[in-house]
Structures are given as C-alpha cells and as structure tokens.
Length: 291
Image (tube, rainbow, N blue to C red):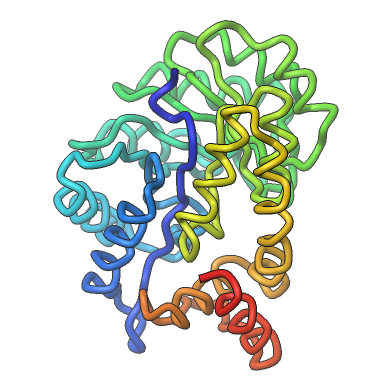
C-alpha cells in the first residue's frame, strides 16, 4: 500500500484578526487532524491560502508543522506556481525536513499546452529530492491536464500520484485503467471520493476533513475495505456540509465550521472574505448534526 493511501487533509492556515498566522490555532488544527485519525496532512495546498502567504511565512509553517507533528503522521508540502523556474527553486531551497512528498498544482493563468504541462512537471520532478504528486484542478487553474499527459508523466520515476479534482469521470476512468504499477490516483474533490475509490483511487486529499477528520476518514476506510453499503449513508450525510463549504469559496466555508468547533477562527486573507451570515448559520446547523 502507498503511504498516501486513505485520507489526507489539505490543511487550512489559521489567521489572527490582524492577518498574521495564528500558530497557536495551527497547532490545535494539527492535533485535531491527528486525533481525527487522518493518514497524512498536506501543508501549503490551495486550501492553506498559499497564494497570499510569503515565502518566509511558508517556511515557518513548514517547519512548525514538522516540529509539532514530530513524525507522528506523514506530511506533504504544497509547492506550485505558474512559473516553472520558481517551483524548481522552491523545491530545491525550502527546508522540507520531515516531509515525504510534494504536491504541485498544474500551472495556472498562463494556460500552457499539454506539452507545456508535461515539461513543467518533468523539470520539477527532475529537480526534486522528494517524490511529486500531480494536482489537476481546472476550476482553479483554467486549464485541464489530460489523462494522456498524466499517464505520460506517470512513467517518471519521481512522480508517484495525481490528485484529480477535474470532476471529469472520463479522465478518472482513463487514468485508473491505464496507470502503471506504483502510480496512484487520489481524489481531490470530497463529493466524488466514494465513486473514485470504486474506480481504483487510493483515497482523498480532503477539504472538509479540516473540520470533520474522523467522519471523512471513516468513509474512506469503509470504501477501501469495499464496504460501500456502510460508506454510502456516511457519504450522503456529509453532502450538504460539503456543499456549504464551497458555496462561497474555499477555505472560508470550512473555516466557518472550524470556528464553530473552536479549532480556529474564520479569518481569511483578501481577496477572500468570510462567508455570509446566512451561509454561516447553515454551516452551524450541519456541524451540530455531524459533530
């Protein structure tokens, strides 16, 4: 089994009211995830609002998380950009002691061709000492990495998996059917984790797991055991909370849920804003049902 089988959580970055990183709440979040029995934590993914964090803040968070987890749980570092040279520089110069892999998003905004995406990832994988997990999320990047490109990259010895958040089952099916041994498919979208595992995915990198790690992990564990009869009602029970977490943007929604659970506050950095009072009230109702 891959060490990234099961539930990974794309961890939020808690902030104080003045916009600075709330390291006390970050430690509380880390313990919440470990106690919630997730299999690994992704640090500095999109859910962490990494686009609005400085290099210095990212390094502090990487180091703080590694120190506080103290090898109790595997860690994945999120390092991505639309500037290939910048990513290569980051993967070679960040202190990633305690991390086991790098999650890197498809280049955004400049909309590269499939060949450009391939060459981007090849340059990163060649430069990195840690194995690479691809991340296909066209809703954020503006471009879709095709299944053919993913499978082409899967042959690189330092690329071990793809986090698929395209929502495209044609892509999921093609990867699952044709991927080489040792390359893994991971769900990048909470609502489709159950059917993706049925197709052959090894788990999820979750957003809602920030608030509900135990519930999310239980669904994944049941799916991986093949007990979809148990997993299906669990999955259905989380659908409304999941929808609410994204209706006004991520991570504003899940942070509202975490605030209700007294894990961290719901501050986000501009251009993101907190969810509306109406959405917050609905999130609170769902959290009370589920926690």
